[in-house]
Length: 316
Image 1 (cartoon, rainbow, N blue to C red):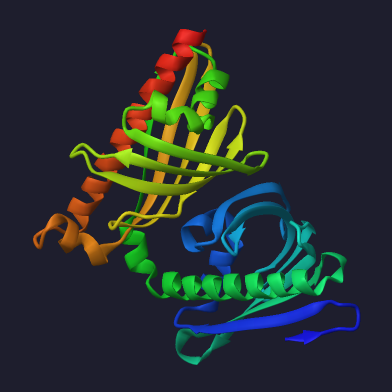
Image 2: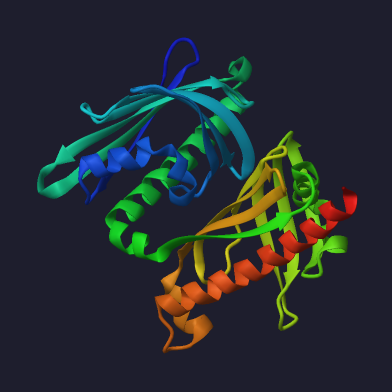
């Protein structure tokens, strides 16, 4: 780490991964998949896309606080480099940029280097210390996750699945959106939700914590970060995960047509195989875990969609 004259900090993190450089480059280039790859990332949206340049909007946690910013990226597949520069940074960052560099090593291994340069708002030492810690924590987390995902790519692919539940609503997308968006009322509106805590840190960026009741009467707490786009969709990432899930992201989508609204709940899950025997018994395998998780998520999603449908059809 070193400091330049102007208060600009430059740091570098690196890791060696047993996977080809092209594979690792692609994982970083395909930013929409980051919520499945990187624990801090909640959602990535493309704003503009050229052949080698793009603008992306990123929602992610920094030291446990949800933030969002816009970055411009230069993609260099031949040179195996990706540079990024935040256009609008989230306080206390004044400016932030960096480079991913993928250096092929013998025996199909790769050195991944992640460079950052940044300044703090007002060049304030307290702000700078906060950014130092956030960059260090996120960089290590990202590189460790990248290594784990790349080295276990075949297994991860086998343990990853998506599914969608859809209901048709004779009402407006706005009313269905409102029902899902206004989660603070879910304990009154949804039988499976016992208590809810919803905060909106900045417009459209929410933290949702709730206690939900299972069929056997037990309750469990879930915490998710949600990003809302009125009235078309609400994307989220669950950060307190039950024993059988390593990753859980989802998106509620509301599409109007001549007959009303198609309201969908899509889930993407990466299973956690370490806990299958403990939760489902010694004879259970991946197929049983997938079925179990899918049924549990679908049951809650469908219940929520049916209540949203009733709400929207009553309001029209």
